[in-house]
Picture 1 (cartoon, rainbow, N blue to C red):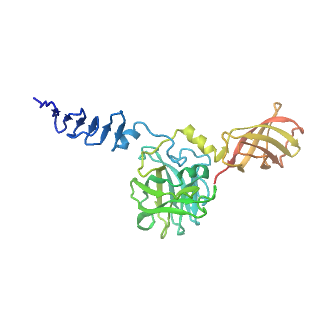
Picture 2: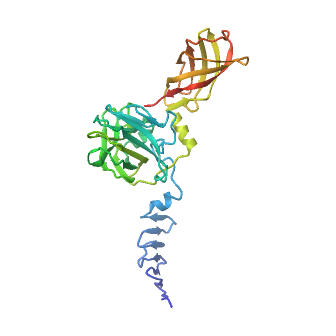
Picture 3: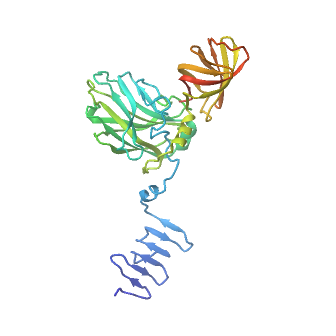
Length: 376
């Protein structure tokens, strides 16, 4: 039978035990309780006022079952939003939303990879050097955080966590890539050319299977913009599988990495619309014929953009529905007018149409695309 003791009673069970002292304090696995309830000599305490103090928490038990939201300062880290497309071979240009290449000229393709081994997101961003290419300029990709969001990080400790792996022919010296957290003092500057930059950088050795890595940085209090980037300097001539890829990338405040925060597709798309809005196979809005060679109209953005956007078109053809007949613009120059961060007017000149001046119509993108960008 278990021991029972009064005036300092004790009930033993296994290696634990429950103890109560003469003041009424109860200890579990603690023979000298310091508060009303003391588990394991202070690991968990409840004081006289009912205040709970926990000195050791296994964060995975809490975070995995009920994630803390909006802790990742990076947008589209699961790469699920790709308004511009899922691959690019252009240096210093955006590819999947919010992620941009940088560096010197090199033959490469950066692309989104579907890979079920990344259990959280199922996707990675791969930088693949072109087979046979012999250019050895440093290059990579990263994401800049706008000033309004970066200001929260000034004077704070941050930690970057990510998964990475390499191809069998990866040509980075020692199979390493460089990872950096940069902080500058400008306002929404080029994220790879910020003013008065301080940084934390580290080289990481990659394997052919994905591994997890972390990088910490104490952001100086005078910094107003933060950038995360990955890069390497290739050597020799590229083989078939000269690539590296990054997945589940997360930048958060603190010194301990938490599990990757997966954002729903709709929420992630809304965040990306602040920086880029691509109209492809969709309605534009109402318009009118201003002159025989010019149409005008209005575009309402789905979200307030970071700044007044700039417009680029790719093989754009507009479909014009006057209610009486349909027409398509096979040529013309598309420009914005009276543009702002919430909406813009537009005009297309050099348009040869058969509608009368002043007639109204509904305008739709018939083929090609319009990209409205307010990126850094």
